[in-house]
Image 1 (spheres, rainbow, N blue to C red):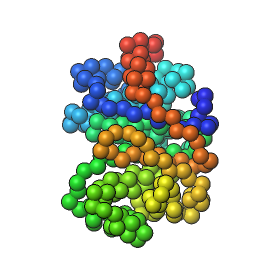
Image 2 (image 1 turned 90 degrees about the horizontal axis):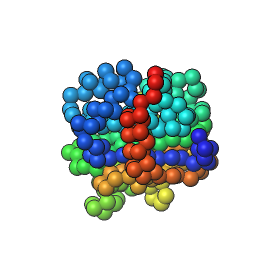
Image 3 (image 1 turned 45 degrees about the horizontal axis):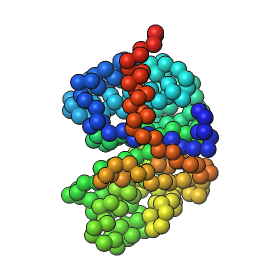
Length: 249
């Protein structure tokens, strides 16, 4: 886990860069329950994304832990957030994953609460109603005052930062996006959070340069850390090595 005490590592993945036929090989990295879950996904693109992102997660964890990717075991928090089995929440090597369509993000850190989210910007018929339910009065006023050509991006920026925070807490969407307030007037930051999660200043919110026409962000607790973005080529080489050089069980 070299460097992860001072850094956050972010891997970006475009599923469209992989041939579907070859991606079937990535199933060999998955556990039985993951294969079962994938087999229930009927939409081909969605299934492919799940298999590839989960395989990449395993491959990367194996790299950080210097072990066989197939030997990785997960435990679930109360609200379903995965962590490495045998570790306490937010301790040791921590990770979080988000994907939408062909775009995936995987983030790693050590000893901190961590959440990441990516959202494809698209027109929504009930965007105003969603904003009224999920945005605070201040967020809503700021969003409504923006020029029309900035409203779509700002909506999804708010959404992904809020989503990253609730994922970092381990509560996920059950915490409610309305429970936290993000300030986008300058550099993104948490402005208000539930009392049980401390002071907003304890949390860092950072925009991720992910994919065209997408909003992406990461949220973590503690002092500011350096974000390191890794090229897809690094991840692809690691993944294909794990798939083609299978180690003994």
